[in-house]
Image (cartoon, rainbow, N blue to C red; front, top):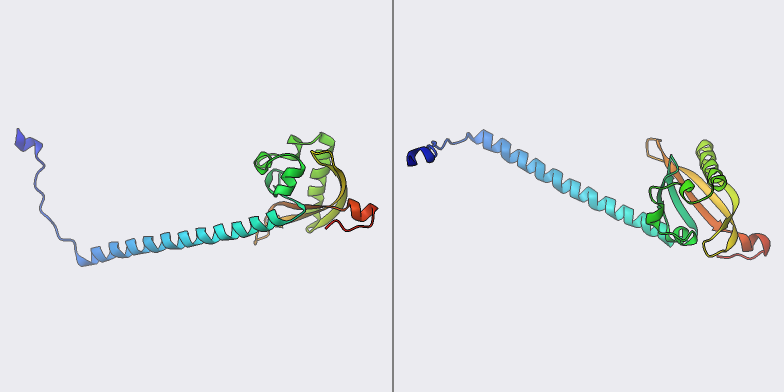
Length: 171
């Protein structure tokens, strides 16, 4: 009975040297791909960190929406102005936060920027969650991939109330 439970002995077969060499080359290629992929990911992380730092350091309200008007990113100034966190904006649209008339206005300006094919500026009155009402110069610009595919719209809004009505530069 023990003979039935024991695995039969298999003769050890030496693999041809060429076969081992092909496996070694494959393993080396896989290792090189992993290293290249890890390096590419580090570069992406660095680039993302640089862009994020730039966006977060701007005194203006800054946001990015996809082609459907879904928020992809915003800076802390934008989130604070509207009394929310960035996470609360992500994956949502203007219609989730504003009345229909104002959301339609924002979306129409997004559309006009994409049609213009470049930056488009307008002035708009905005009210913060704290009750501050100011006139903002808003610049919206289409964002495209290197091959020209539209990703969405990048927006910047600068408070120009003091400049416009008092002649002072707020910055």
